[in-house]
Length: 255
Image (cartoon, rainbow, N blue to C red):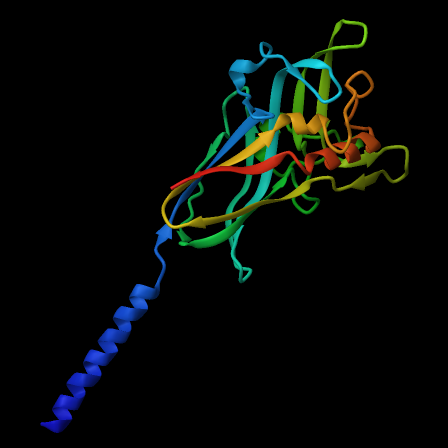
């Protein structure tokens, strides 16, 4: 009888341990990522194209006709260094209203994470012709400039120093110097650490681009001087990389 009682106690203890182990496991949640654009807090959408006037840090009035950009290696990292990959890349075309919401097919344990990503592709992923969808939307960089893919196409019109309307093409790619043989290339994609967030329910997470920052800091952008042919301009690409450090931030997180 004593042995039987002891077996019952042991079985109950094991069951209690199993229950505690189950209780200790965090629930899984899902996230959606929303990519938004603003000009110093004023929303920028397709409805604003060619109609809403913005003033950059140098004082030029401008309108936007096109805004397309690529965010890659989107991931969550916890304090122990574990990484949860959310997406290889997301291509956002504001004018076509595509890529503005990304729904990763990933279940994420509840917890606290840092949201990280990359503006553009790094050199390892920036492989010429490797992405059929990007090829189909003419996102390629010409081979003489090093091939691979754009990071961003921002285009529009501005009022120049003579009071005339003039087009601009603010295109970011991997910096290249075609005057050297072989061509000199420098990775100017931007590693983004968007900050910390705690996930305890399914969440909607905003990644916000402040378009005004491309023209602001640390390089105040003079569109009268730098308005076109920026892709083969090595120094301009370095300047755009520097300005891009302040463009993206973690916006609203709804749970």
